[in-house]
Image 1 (tube, helix red, strand yellow):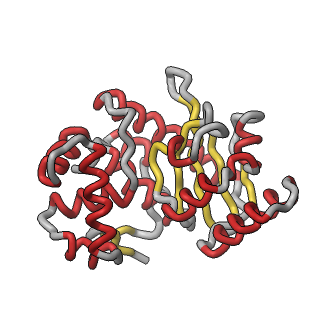
Image 2 (tube, one colour; image 1 turned 90 degrees about the vertical axis):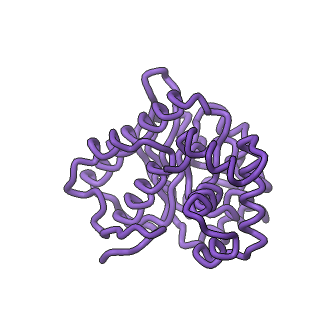
Length: 251
């Protein structure tokens, strides 16, 4: 069944049965990759995704390690504020293996001593419909390690599905690194909301109109736009849009 996201009609079968490698190679911007990963996530029934660095993952905040993500900002903020990397079964396993694996909320509960922080965070995950995280470790030609994580409800992924997701993860990460290398902008990471607000601003929408489109308050939209304007070292929103286009964050 097709869905519409940011004006784009998306078929539920997404990239399945298609030449996903060829499609990924044609993606030109971080925003293109974000939209592609949203389609992949929907096609396979996941709630959200995140691509993040592995090296130093347990020492840095999750927000600092993320390269591309549509994970709810509230979950990322909660994760960082409670230092949940200390409890993360996924972080521990990433140190031990380079093959794909799945972690459930029950794994967190079983492999950690119960604490108020962990109980609070896991309850929040369940509220968002996330009870399983599927990790796909990847690396590029320069040896940079990362992991692509798809999150959603518990599911027994078949071997064929795991292999397909692994191939997508490899191609997406390498394309992301290629784009970052071409733009030489590794230090600036924009959130999904910041990219969305910039994209709609580029389309000529006002803050009030963007708020209606994204289901946010006008105050929140202004917050995102002011924040991303500072990130891009721009003097105003118009210049921020121009810089974002030049740097490949939006198309």
